[in-house]
Length: 217
Ligand SMILES: [Fe+2]
Image (tube, rainbow, N blue to C red; front, side, top):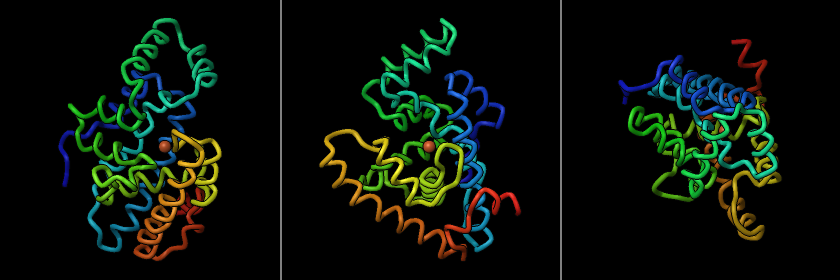
């Protein structure tokens, strides 16, 4: 479905500035958007229908509230680099969204103006795979979720490596180590299954798809 209320590229940049998204997260967002769009184009060549513009905009904004998940030392480092009035704004955002994940907070910020983008972002939470209400279903949702699981910082890496790094940093999880282990044992195979679904359709090996490979197209 083509959504008329998508942000322009300029509007996405303005949102990233307004929410003081750190430069390394902006770069990560851009790398995720680029990979997701590449995979979408390959799937479109095979006859799938995908709203590439929606996917690209969701990619560019998907981690706009990621700072909410920063643990205190990281957050303080981030905050120290902001001018005083911006520090106040982030303190307010952290207070307002303290019980939410960064995905839900981005959804909340974007939903009134850009509903399709907001919904796509809401479904990129690692644990969404186990939740019927927010599991990625459309190609746009699946490609955003998957591309995020292939981009470590701003580099495309094998899925296995990115998942291992995420688990090590515990970025996907909250709760006890034992519970997290049970969850990863359930979620990771579903992501590999998603990878298989995408790559069987486009006829490539997932490991072939690197930055250089994409740039050579
Ligand atoms: Fe991400």
